[in-house]
Amino acid sequence: MIPNEFITSAVELPGYRIVRNVGIVRGIVVRSRSIVGTIGAGLQSLFGGNITLWTELCEATRRDAFALMAQHAQAAGGNAVVGMRYDTTEIAQGVAEVLAYGTAVVVDFGHGLLRCRRLLPTGRVERPLH
Image (cartoon, rainbow, N blue to C red; front, side, top):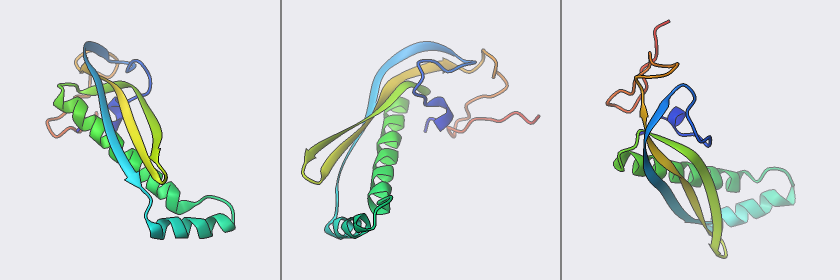
């Protein structure tokens, strides 16, 4: 999996050189609210403030779409994603699509300000010891 620090909404990764544009990648998740969640959220809305049941559902859905996008980028041959965005569409009452998308790129980890780091086969980033 591509580390989160190599997925950005910016169009570049400061300190690294993008050597190849792989193309657009995406992760799509479609979720619906459960009847229990809808009733619980309705009760929370009576008291005002953050509706935590829906907040948790939205956060989980975005996290899943993000992970799918990162998997798609890696499968396409990328090791980073730039220009990452989210989009949401209600496709039926109580059913929403969350789309995470961006441009998969290949970054040269041997150049730039952070050359002391490298991407390990596990997908993690090697940290300098100092």
